[in-house]
Length: 357
Image 1: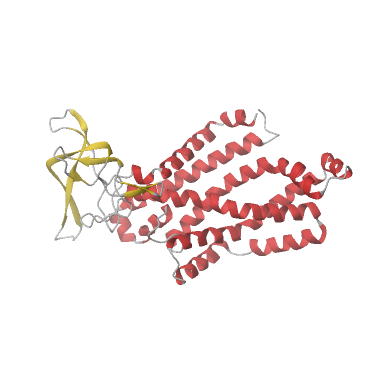
Image 2: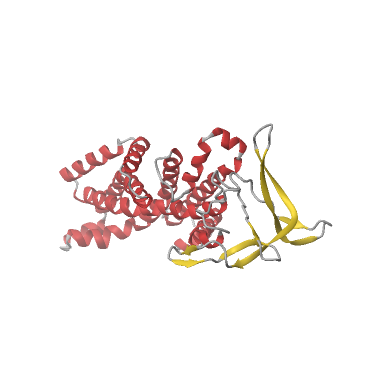
């Protein structure tokens, strides 16, 4: 019944397809990208997106190809100018080997890539579908690899914050009394913490300790979980308070069932659908928070990358005006957040017992 209701939600289906596509791209990011995400092409700093040509000089259709580009400095404006060398065509070839080495799935060394631009004599030209950053690194590959972190932040925070919120919120709602009052006051303390300033302070502290990029990443995850669990706990408390007064819970208690059995067998199944929906709807918020932290320089650090960290280059107004393609990671954030919201809305409507099917 829930699956049928979910399938009828067209916008939710679109969001789900986009989310699955993002996950698939994240898994094969290093393979899909034409070069390693850390490779620096020093001859192409802030290179514009490469133009892919589909027609020959006579106007007839052709295999897609690109030209190599050369960089020069305008002596009047001192702006970088990239010009195409039309003396040789580099055709787009798929499923190629011999490119820059990377680790597929993070641990399988390979030189294979989905595509590359090679001339008939075997020489290769770089393809920058989304341009490059100030160090000449391919923005397309870095956006793909950045999806690892940006998409993982939400679920990882949920894995930490949700169990804590379920445990304390469930205890608070089921037992009530002094236990309920104490736990709720603790929740209010955490809810009163100003989220972004505290996260910025934690991020600065993590960087000050000289931790590795991976440790900073996990530090960001834990920091987000710390300021998030209180809201989960309060909502779970309300759910448990409503369910514990129902007849089937009272009957189980009168039959001699233990508190643990009542919680596990009777209360938890009745809030599972809510937990799934709530977790899905919380993921976009976590993604935006991580993106904001990384954009401000307090989140993900090099050599790791995320969409927010890639947007950090846009803090330079001059660079943003001259090289607008550095804003492209923001489009990935917008699409991913909307997709998760659409999927969450569809799940919420599907599990709503009062919705009209």
